[in-house]
Structures are given as structure tokens and as C-alpha cells.
Image (tube, rainbow, N blue to C red; front, side, top):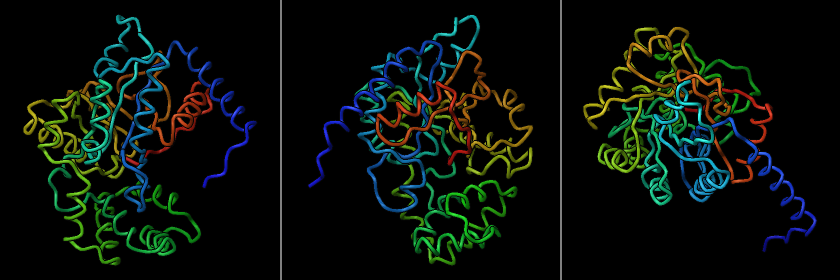
Amino acid sequence: MARERPAKYLARRLLYYGGLNRLLLALRSRSIILGYHRVIPAGPGLLNQFLDSVSPEDFAGHLRYLRSLGFRFVGLNELVASLSPAAGRPARLAVVTFDDGYRDLYDNALPILRDLGVPFSLFLNTATVGANRLSWVHRVLAALDRVSPETQTRLLAAAIQAPAGLGLEELFGRLVRWPDSGRLEAISQDLASRTGLTPEDEARTCRELYLDWGQLSELAGQGGSIECHTHEHFPLSSLGGEQVAGQIQTCNQIIQQNLGRPPQAMSIPFGLDNAGALPRLSQLRLSAVCTSRRALVGPDAQAEALPRVFPVGNTLDLATRLSRLLLGNKRNKTGRG
């Protein structure tokens, strides 16, 4: 049986929570874009734990909490339109976004979004839809899942020629900054071979992990806009200029062919930009770009570099994070997807 919390602890908790609420209710000039990856119950494995997962209960709690603070949930296109000076910069808008394209968006998040009447955007990696082989980054995680934590760090450190003693988080951060997409693919294949991850294992994981076009069509018909996250989910910093354009164009074309609507926006994989990629987005007819920069959407926000907040934990964790961002105590760091 869990130990009962002392009354003084609970009183301090309520006062703390109430203070955060009063601070956030005073917010007048900010909007928020929420960024999610997986909505799943807590479970073992890097594919569950390493992708900014949140439980369905906490996800629903986040949405209800923001609504209680006076935020109005809108589609990404409405928030982008509000950034025009002619729009008067309405605040307290909230947008829900997802990156990558995981099946639990359909299984676990969609019923909550539908019940609460909340629109959303999915930034999709089109190479994973209906695939039998994992994305390079998911292959890395699935391969490492097969060995002990000590072996995970040893194998990944050797693969990227990193010094001993670094933790898995730091090693993964170095991996996604590798400047060569071909090498990233080779590393993922090598780790699969070393840990015994077979093509059959990958195909089974794909069926459990990724959305298919039927599910995507249903998402699009129930309040979802399907947007671009590039075709193969390589960091833009690992690609040449023509490769960046090709990844975006391929993603956009596949979405239009299968869903009948071209993407209007994109999010940058891992938040890592290739200098010179963003200026070409206007040529690709995209109206907005979401980044992995952690911040609220303020009066000076620009559609080509929108910040997001990536909630993890419960409603109190979200309230604490928002208050820190509001007070300027924020850290902008690389995202995981």
C-alpha cells in the first residue's frame, strides 16, 4: 500500500499548483503549440521511453488544463493566420501537433481529441507508412532494446567513435548530429546486425509502431491535418541542399497522392536545420515551419520558425514547465523527432 502523504505536504502542493495557475491565468500575449510523439501507457523499452511518450490520461489532462486556463484550441493554419499584423495578434490559442506518425495517435490520442473537439496536425514521415523496414532512428532504438543498458552505451559509443563514460542520452544527441545521412543508415544497419535484429523483427515492429494510409485517411477526416516531416526522417544537417529539397518534395507528393491535399506546413526532424534549407521553404509552398525550440508563441513569432512545448508527465509538470517558459527560464535544445 502506498504511504499516505502528510497533510502539510499536500497543502504545500496545492498552494504551489494554485500559484502556478494564477501566474498562467495572467498570461495575455502568448499562444502555445504542443508537440507530442507517442501517447501510450508507460512501458519498458527505448521505443516507448525514448520518444517523449506521455500516457493517455496525462495527455487528456494537458488538454483539459489548458482549456481551463482560457486557451482556445485551433488548427495550425488558424494560429499562423493570427500572426499577421492585420489579425490583431489574438492570444491564448493552443495547437496540438504530433511528429513522425505512430499508431498510438490513432489508437489512444484520437478518441481523446475527438471527445474534446480538439483539432490537430500530424507531421508525417512518409517512408514509414505501410513499411516493412524501420526508419533508421527506430532501427537504432529497436536494436539497442535487445541488449543490456551497459551494452547499449558501449555499442553506440563505438558506432559514433565517442569517448567512454557518456550516457545514452548524450550519445544519442551526438548520433543525430552526425553530418552524413548515409553513415546514419549504415550505423543503424550495423547495430541491427550486431544485436540480432532481423528483417522479420523489423516488419513485426513496423505493424505495431506505424500508421497506415487507411488510418491516416480517417485521422484526416476527424480533425487532423497531415503535414510534412520529410520522407525519411534524417536530420536536415546530415543532408546536402538538393537532398533536403528532395526529402520535403517527396513527402509532400506522397501525402497529396494518398490523401488528396498537399501539406501546408512542416516540422524539422530533430530540430536540426541545415543552414540554407529554411529560405527555400517559400519555394516549396509551405506556410509554416515548426521547430523543436522550447518556447511559447509570443507577439514576435515568425511562421517560418515556430517554437513548441513538448509536454511530458502530468498536469502539474506541464504547469511548471509553462511557468518557467513564461518567466524566461527556458532551455532551447534539440528534440527527438
